[in-house]
Every structure is written in C-alpha cells, then in structure tokens.
Amino acid sequence: MLLSFPYMHPELFRAKPVPGMVFFDPGLQVEAGEHAFRPENLPLDPKTATALIGDCISFGEQFKDPGEMAYFGATTTEEFYEGSSLSIQSQLIQRFNEGPGDKEEREKNEAASKAQFVLLLAWFFEERMMELQGLEKGVRDTWKSIDTTLGVEDEDRIEGRVLDLGNMESHTGGVSGGQSVPLPWQRIAESLPAFIPDGTILVCADAEIIAQWDDLEISFAAADKELGLPDGTEVAILPAWKFGGRRKAPEGLPLALSELTVAVIR
Image (cartoon, rainbow, N blue to C red; front, side, top):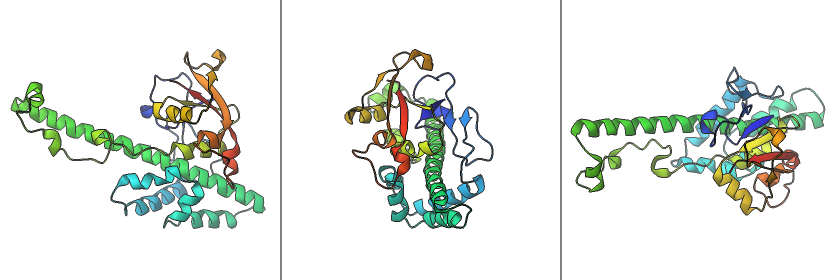
C-alpha cells in the first residue's frame, strides 16, 4: 500500500498524484473519505474522537498565537499530555483500565489510542488549514475585485501611487504573508506504525521534511520500479523514531521502534 505522508488530504499532497496512493483516515468522520485508508483496529470511535478533539480545542483557545499550539509536534506524546491542562490522558487511561483484557493488552490499547489521537489532531489541523486558506483566498479575491472596480492597475501598485490594500486585509490566521504553523509530522511518523499493515510505503513529497531527513543523514536509495512510484523516487527503511527526527531511540514508546518504509519524491 502506498500511503501519503504526512498529509491526510489529497489537496495538500505536494506532487503529482501517485496512482493507487491512499490517504490516512484516523476516524473522526462517521464515513471514510474518498481515496482514504481507515484501519479496522482504531480504538477510538468517531464520537469519542470528536469529544477529545473538543477538549483540545478548548485547551487551544487559551493561546493568542496559534503557533504555540503546535508545540506538541516537537514533543513526545507523553510530554504533550502531561504538559497540558487537558483531561485527555485521564480519559484514555480510564477508558482502557476499565476495559477487557489483561494489563499488557490494556497498555497496548492505550498506546494505540494515544497514537490515534495524534493522528486525529493532525487530520483536524489540516482541515482548519484548508478552511483558512480558502478564507484568505476569498479575502484576496474580494480586494482584487474592488481594485478592478476602482480601476486600479498593477503598475499603480508597483510604483506605490496607491495605498497597498494588502495592509488592510483581514488576517485569517492561515498562511498569510507566507507564514504557516508546521504540521507535527515527526509525531505522525511515530504514530502510524500502530495502524498501517506490513508492506506499507509512506510517500513524502514535502521538500522541507525531506531536507530535514537529509540533515539527519538518512540515506535513501533508488526505488524498485515494481513499486509503481514515479521515476527518481528514493526509498529508505528505518525505525520510525529516526524518521521522527530523533537522534536516539526513545524509551517508553514501543511504536517508535517499528520499522517504516519511506519513499521521497524530490
């Protein structure tokens, strides 16, 4: 299976569509989306997932700068839960402490639920990113329409003879001015092993992520043509924690020790 990484929405994949590639669906919606892969072993149902995301939104409302909320992308899942005022961890622990199975099975389910929660956050964050991009485009198109109505020419802007209406635009909090809040792809890499089947290849076309892997001296080799990937694609097989940007294996995160196969499209 070819699985997009880290983006879970086709609109955000930064290369030409790869035939047969699917996008991870962490189970927030009742029905899986088009071209989506939704695992059958997701521990959190849509109702529970929605409630947890609601908790996260309430927590995030205390931040003036939305970029601050992205700090969980640079921390482990444990640090995120312990460092927040959310009831997320207690909810997950209680859910599985009261569930069936022995201690080992409950701990495994708890780890899977935390991994799913990270993926749910990322999926929800992508949704908001696209909404904000759409709002910003609408604002810009409106100003462009006003310019046209007023007879403002592009050269007038360039020569500075008119007020730059861009300074008056409403800031939607999206990618205005080239700014963006980074997706927590490091934690996505360490969470996916809980749900993807053997043989899955994560396909990444994000130049910034690939550059960081190069900085970490991750060695990629030419992909086998039988994989059906675009010409020039390179592949590496390493533990998830290495793709997660760590310098050494983390303790207490067994999912991060799982091997991942990652293909990069440069």
